[in-house]
Every structure is written in C-alpha cells, then in structure tokens.
Length: 203
Length: 264
Image (cartoon, helix red, strand yellow):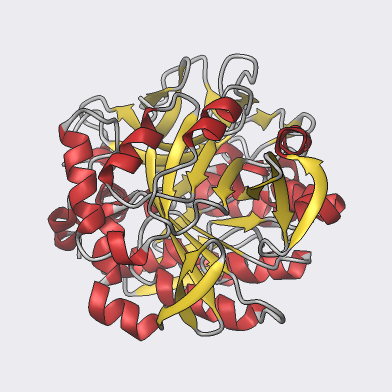
C-alpha cells in the first residue's frame, strides 16, 4: 500500500505520516511530484494555514493540474484533512475570495466571531449517520480534534458527518472516492487512528 | 459539544526536562528518563494536548530543541504545541517540520508583532498560541517576556487587549507567582480576564491536584487547563484525575488507551 501525502509546503506533515505508519501503512511518501502522486494507491491532502496562500502554493507546483488528473480522471481515492478538505471545495472567503480545487460542492466561510469564540479549538463531538465508510466501527458522538476559523457548508448533502459549533457545519464528507475531514484524525487519538485505518481499508 | 481540555506542559532546558517553580528551573530528567519512568507515550493517551516549551536561558538552540520534539512526538497522536525563543519564520518552520502542530510564542508578541503577523498569515491564526507570563509587582499584574526576565511597561489588561488585535489563535496565561507551587490557579485574575478574552483561553500556573484542575475547568471562559507539574501529574496522576473529573460530569473528551493499542 503506497500512500502519498501531498506536500505543498505548509504545516506539519510528520504527525500524519507517523499515524499512518502506526496503523501499519508500509509505504508512505511525502511529495509534490507528479511521478510519486501517480504511483500512489491513495492520497492524503493535508494542510494548515490560509486557503489563499495554500492555493497559490498548489498552483505554483502545478498540483491543481496533477490532482485533477489523478483524482478526477483516474479516480484515485483521496482524503483531505482540515485545510486540505476545504481546498477540495468550490471556494473560500479566507482573506479574499479564492477558488478551490472544486472536487465537491461546498463553500468555505468564517464562523461568526460575534456569536462565538473563534477559532473553534479542541475536541468536539460529531454526529455520524449510518453507513459512512470513514466511520466504520466509530460510534455516533465520538470526539475529534478541531482547530479552524473557517468551515465548509453545502446546499446539498455530501454524505457527511456534522459538528455543531453554534450551528452545524460539515465535519466530513464522502463523495465517491473523494473524502474530506475538517478535524485532524492524526491528532484525535484512537478515534482518529481508526478513521485513517478505515480510509485505507474502505476507499 | 465542544469539550474542555487538559494540557500537559513540558518545560525543556538544555537537554533536560525541568520542574519549574516561579520560573526557577530544576532538572528532572532527559528524554530517555521521561520514556523509561513515565512511559510518556502511554500518558499521552490520557491527555488532550501537549505543549513543550524551550526555557533554556541564555542561548537557545532551536535545532537541538526541534530534535527533541521529533523524538517526543513519535507515536503520540494528540496536538503538540512547541515554542520558546522563536525569532524568525525559519525557527517556526523548523518546529512545524519537526512535528509541532502549533507553535507558542511569547516575547515577539511584544517586540516583533510584524513576525507574528507573518506567522499568522502563513500558518493561520489557529496554529499560533500566544503565551503571557505575568506576576504581581506592587499589587499590579505586570507582564514579563524573555522567560520572565524582563518586565514590559504594560498592564496585564492592556496587554491582553493588544493580543486580541494580533489575531493569534489561543492565549496561554501563566502566573509566575503560582508557577510550580501546587497551590492552585490564580483564579481571581483568570475569572476577571476570561470575561473579555475572545480567544480560547488556556490557563497555567499552580495546578497541584485534581481539585485545582476542577476549579479551572469550572470557569466559563476557560477552554483548557494546563499543568507542568511533573511530580504531581506524570505517572498515573493525570490519568486518575482525568477519570474522576469525567465521572463527576466534566465535559472532557473520552479516550481509551487500550483501544488505541488495538489500532496497531
């Protein structure tokens, strides 16, 4: 099993690769090269930082073109984590309006700072409907670690789990072979390890 | 619902983990010691977050500290915040690349706000924890930077307002007077400040037992309680404290170490 963590130069990739290795993935590569990405069995799109900055890094490295071919044309499974999940949406208003990779029909906007503490930081429970492949064996209302100021909403159901922080937002989606999680499975103890295992096994 | 957090803070200095009391450091043991006697990886499954602070006085080696982080985070799947002496974008980058999920900054919040802005721009505000050390001087809460060695001409209240404008993600509030005493958190000041801090607030300094954690968690605006007390809480102290806090109804995330083992 070869898992490639897509590297566009932002944030901590070590905890993701160490979580993958903990659950038994033997071939983990951190790369932004087309050759590596196309050889992967599965991809992980991580990310910490600002949407706008991340999109410009992605375009600079031509990753938008590579990912479109590998994920959309060749239908390789991908899991976006946190900002990586948001990047797969249509757009974000972080700093200024920026278009995303447009893999799923979701838009990213900021939590209302006048209503609650922003960022949304800490472990929060999520509501998990039945038959979600990422959550096999994980019970409803389990805790996952979130840290973000922006969140994804959609006008359709994206086969999603939801989290409530003064209103519901998308905690995860599964659209065919494309999955995304707003929380950090690599920082969510056994719940997160289990979810990563499910991604490897079920996608 | 959004849970509150219990955070363990490890104070590092020049190759060793330290017990700090009023910011005076006493050597406890190195990384090998931490693993051998306290089975750190196991403990990590009973806390919600880990903060590691490089409190080396004089010259801090960020490369050496980054190596410690890398060794420490192996098989620890909780958020790790690292910092102490961050003076450039490169320092921050090194810590993120070494396994830190967030960084904690202190002196630059006062003396290099441009760097803080740049860090927020690159890594997002949620990755930046702003640490504030304060102590009472002539009955007034004064803010200290540079490992508590330099007092700045601003009251705690006005400094907190200054931080709010910096767009950092969380505030780590540490009382130097209470630090390492085990006498409990500085509850009066915390209650006062928590009313107008709009960022998630982590409180530190003084926790010596479960009751203290409870007193801190009870305050509405407190998002997390931190302890750096290696003697009182490492071993199974923190695990037990956590279990009993959950039993009496505190909303902490539920962890099961044995389940984690089974993920292997």
